[in-house]
Image 1 (cartoon, rainbow, N blue to C red):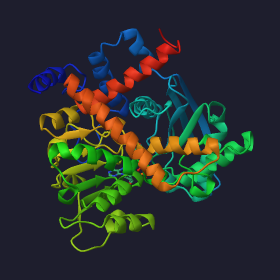
Image 2 (image 1 turned 45 degrees about the vertical axis):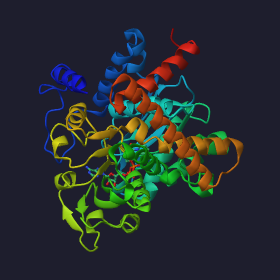
Image 3 (image 1 turned 90 degrees about the horizontal axis):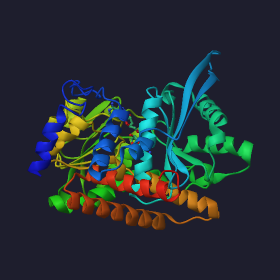
Image 4 (image 1 turned 45 degrees about the horizontal axis):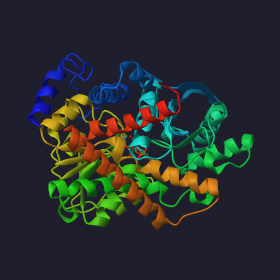
Length: 446
Ligand code: NAD
């Protein structure tokens, strides 16, 4: 351990994330300036160095297989045309069809989508499901548009990218700003061109051949990871206080399931602000309040106070769950966290410099590439069910999800112990090894 800390210290100034790098300390309540792509690249480089992967092979994975950028002109209700940019990036397909979510968010750009596509390549390999990695997005804020306008954006996006999609090519799913309804529109649009094809997207509504358990899957997977990691810290659910940053799909489901185990939600946030309560916040009530269109900060219950995003980070708890956007934990705030464990529900929430501070402070991190894989695992189940026109009940879905998540945790932990590296580097290394093996065996690289 001491050796690892020393090596990290030496690496800091050389890794591009030192004081002169792009992860300069931003204000603690803001996101880091370092991009998701820089974050993923840093961990990839560390893992390939550990593995001793030939540089010419590593180079294959530093770029994407295919990147599609499209123009999405949509006439809004004010009569004016707004032009959005849409992206679909297919990073690597050695292990199966491309798979990854579609994000609707004003800050979406090609660089971010590339990073998230690459993460999907390693994630699907780490949990051992037969997919490659992809991601998509549109730089639109769905909360600013009317429902019919969001539908037009989704349909127009599908029209432009459908040629590279399909059940044996590339299968989208929900991500930030998209949900089961968005997937229904995408499926319908794809069906107009190709005939009814439910397996072309996952995360669909139950009424349209969606899978039981898909909506809660990423949050449930986060909780499975907590359960696996907790005994190492002598943590039991009844004595676990937790904070959720980003009370959306992933965050609110993780909170509800943690609460079912007996853990106590003591703080939560959304883009609009944060709340906390030492005595606990009812995770179900808060989810209902938000689902009904309420603002998280207006949640009114005994002992609940409104706090700043920084105060939320400083809230004393055992487990902190980032479930918002990338770059939220960084050089400027990692020392403020007051927890023993972080389970990363969000993608790329921790910058390299932030990660080093957490490691030096002895805070255990279950990294995104394994912790938030529950969604893609149940998306895989949905795809399998769709291909067979068959449906499993929710218990079967959740049990199978648990088996896969536990296996992934144990395999990554074993590698982390054997190689004396963090769970994050062990997870990346395991994923990279599997993808390299598949790419080599099929003759894509040699
Ligand atoms: P979502 O849109 O349902 O929720 C995002 C939440 O984050 C919202 O509550 C939003 O208000 C909040 N948020 C945004 N900016 C914030 C800020 N600055 N501070 C605090 N909160 C903020 O999205 P989601 O599907 O829950 O995805 C959340 C994260 O999980 C993303 O990083 C996504 O890539 C990742 N993820 C999602 C899935 C999935 O199945 N949905 C799977 C794997 C990973």
